Image (cartoon, rainbow, N blue to C red; front, side, top):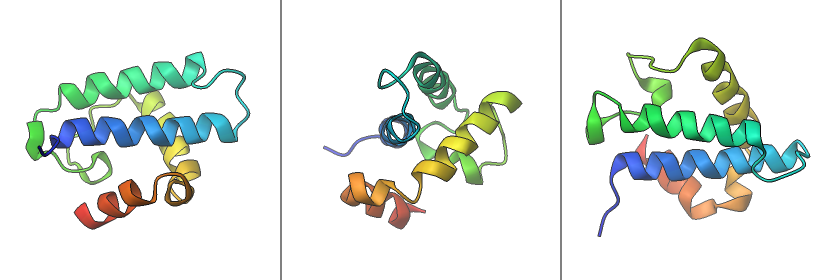
Amino acid sequence: MKKSRRVLEKEIFDKITIIYCKGNNHSVIPCSRCKEIMNYAHLRINSCTFGDDKKFCSKCTVHCFKPDMRENVKKIMRYSGPRIIFYHPIMAMKHLLSK
């Protein structure tokens, strides 16, 4: 059974956030701040107006993240993007191919 676009995006976001949290030596994985960002991202992904036809958030014309959260997400993606291939190579390749 194929997972929906929203489910996949939330799974990927959780994994990159955990990579970021571990890499920045946060005391608990995920730490409360990273967990807050993950929960916020889940809410925004769930309420996306495009539904399962959504694009990647970075390619979207409608930015639904608050500016401060958007900056946090960018920071997480900048750190984890190049590293995810070592932690989750199959997921990373699928993600790149679906772009």
